[in-house]
Structures are given as structure tokens and as C-alpha cells.
Length: 244
Image (cartoon, rainbow, N blue to C red):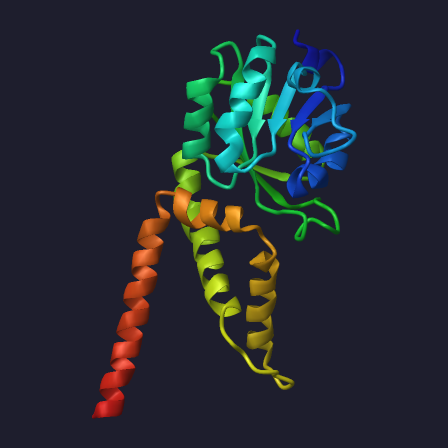
């Protein structure tokens, strides 16, 4: 029986930025957490954090390969390595190419973040995408459900196709709206207020996250093409009507 079954799991958390710091107290409900981040004064040594039975990479896609190479020499045989990026096909391919065969890989995507989860994570959704055949994926799902999360499993490709619309479209529209030079608007409608609230939910996301969602997901190209096509057709139709 693995150590994950015999006792509370121990976690190594690589990356203590906005999301790493947000998820750390939730992970601590499941077991001890050793966090490593060179920019944090209370950071545990990398070798110690990477030697835990479960190692979570809470780093941007752009730093994933660097982090994977750093932890690779310290990983235990049978360890479960988890990534939390907003896309799945590319990060899992990176990890498969760098990490040793003796570890299990699990792609996860929390469909929430520090803002949407600030009042608690119970009922929020978490997507799981096993990157290699992983007996521990079901155990991980049970642990996450124990935190009150709604867990869904799908393939990395299915995930990225769906997120191209769910996240890609949202971030593209939000970036357009937030870039408009709006005057002060003391009198608004409910629908306008919903639009502004939706925009505000992603407006504080980092530029790196925006680029990951809108550029690194290969299926967002179709969303962009349709968005441009429909916008052009709408404005051209209006121009024709005005000219008539």
C-alpha cells in the first residue's frame, strides 16, 4: 500500500506566487505542505520539497520546463507530479519530455482562482487530466472532493477545446472592454453591470496568464477567427444600412 493510502499525504509546492499562496492553506487541510519559491523568505529547500510523495508545480507555463528540470533529480519513484496550468496539452507534453518515467503525471485545472475562490472553494470545479496512466488519479480525485470541490475528468485535448471558448473568449472580450475609453457612467442597466463585473473578474489576471490562455491554447485560433469574422460582418452590415 502506498504512503498516500497509509497516512495523510505530504505535499511539495513549487511556486508560492498568487495561486500557490492561495492554494497552500487548502492543501494543508489534506496534509503537510513544504513550499519552495526562491523569492519567498520561508521557502523550503528545493530538494526537500521535490522529494515529497505529491509535488505540485504552481508556476506559469513559461516556467514549467525550467521547474521540471529543477525537480527531476529529486523526485521519488512513484511520486505524483501535478501541474495546475490553464491549458493541458502543451504542459503535459513538456512534463512527459522532461520528467523520469518512474513518476506519475496529473494535469489539473482549477476553474477558479484567488478572486473567485476568496470566499471559499466548496462547490467550485476542478478538471483532472491524467498525463500518464495514474493509479493515484482516483485517489487525488477523492482528496479534492474531500475539500468540497466538484471534480471532472477529461482528456487534455477535450479540456483545451472547451477552454478555448470558456476562457479564451472571456479573456479576449474582457481585454477589449477594459481597453475602451469609457466616460463616467452613473446610470447603468443590469446587463451592463453584469458585463463590467465579468470583465473585472479577469482584469487582474497577469499578462502571462492572458497570453497562456489566448496564445498557447492551439484551439483559441478558431475562436479568434470567428470573433473577428462576426465583428467584421456586423460592422459591415451597419455601414451598408447607413449608406442605403
